[in-house]
Amino acid sequence: MRLDKYLKISRLIKRRTVANEACDNGRVTLNGRVARASAEVKPGSFGNRETRVEVLTVQENVRKEAAADLFRYLPASEQETTSEESSEDVES
Image 1 (spheres, rainbow, N blue to C red):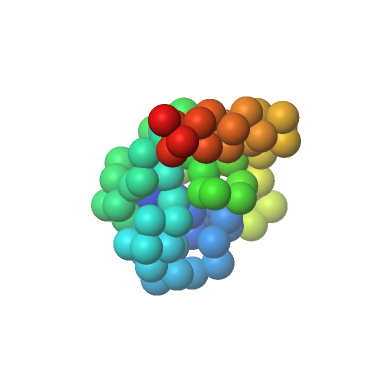
Image 2 (cartoon, rainbow, N blue to C red; image 1 turned 90 degrees about the horizontal axis):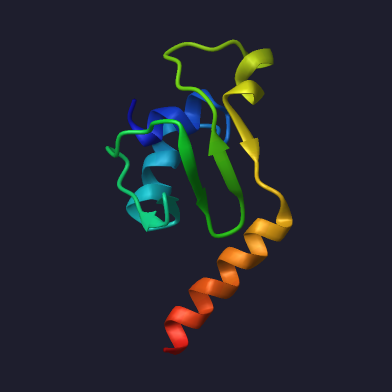
């Protein structure tokens, strides 16, 4: 499934066009790399600079009540570790 469609279906982003723009502007990463809207989403991790989530499942159609079951938010401690690692890469 395309990344922009997954972001919309999982209700992480309200509209697919907004998800597409976020990807085009480099605000979404997939497994640590900046991802295009057309990137293929599979169970694994992705996130933007402020929110990090793990993809649990990929489905074409999901009811609003079940959308939260498609992903889980990663703990803040993992987010801090990731941002510390990326700042070390920039300084090197």
